[in-house]
Length: 249
Image (cartoon, rainbow, N blue to C red):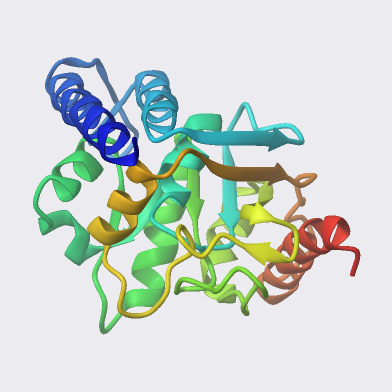
């Protein structure tokens, strides 16, 4: 039965990927303040919701997603974080430059309005400028300020420099807590572990009956009167508190 389930979902996934390619070529793009054009975010959100349905990811959404410009900050557990956040918001994402050149994934990332950042000299100022430019256009941008994927048990330290643009543009910060599995028991199939590949995780999700995902939108944080370290600390604490509340910590 699991083999038939896998094959059927894999076929649906291929068709949905082709649909995404068609959308990326045909959907409406709007001028942005810095001269670039950005896609209408709603078709991207709808595509992400359908992707989760095909993968049989049961998404539980708590709290209120933002409806205007916001810097969305989340703990990072898996590549599945991106469609989960996208399904509930109109956010684009911040990504390392290397993703731009990945087969297929890079193409979709570019079409979705992803902000790409080069590593190296001047990275901090480049990141702040890129985030500020997007937020000034009344858009939502989602980032993973831990800088790496966690194990689902503890929210790692946030890099304060990523919050500078929110202060500069007076944009609220929305902490978002992500969880796969149940409180205190992270889903070992979904949550990334060293040595496991994107395709390996994908195939296991396709073969299983269902995957449980939860996204918790914490109250927005005002950047007014705060420095970036304070804002980063408050965002991390909000996410950790949201995850710990159900775990009984």
